[in-house]
Image (cartoon, rainbow, N blue to C red; front, side, top):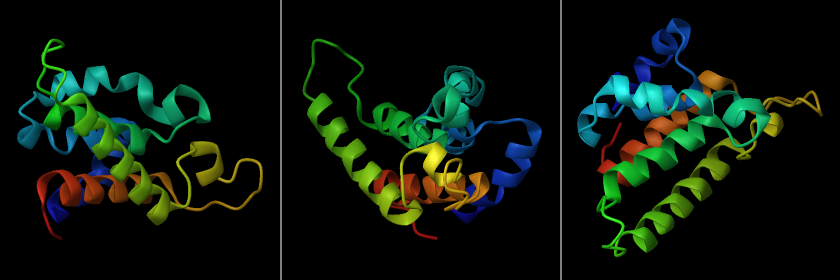
Length: 137
């Protein structure tokens, strides 16, 4: 998992947003081409486009759907499981980072930054690895 985490600064510097960094880190295990993941997650950086839900967290939620969904709207069996996974990921992210909101994490209103973008992304990658794929550091 650490090789995925170690690519964060490189990918972020290349122009990947927070969401792209997380979901693209697992393209191989999700079985989806990285270019497709990059495209579909492009609008979810900067707190879903403007300081809302953290992009790193959004990337985790995308990964949960990609990993768990049956991909068939008529087989509604996976939706409750996926939602439970997202809840688990969200709770773990909030515990580690302190909030799910980009604006709060960045300390926009308080001047008290909880965590840098790179560190949020690293936590997102670690949480996905642990919770979705059973990986250890």
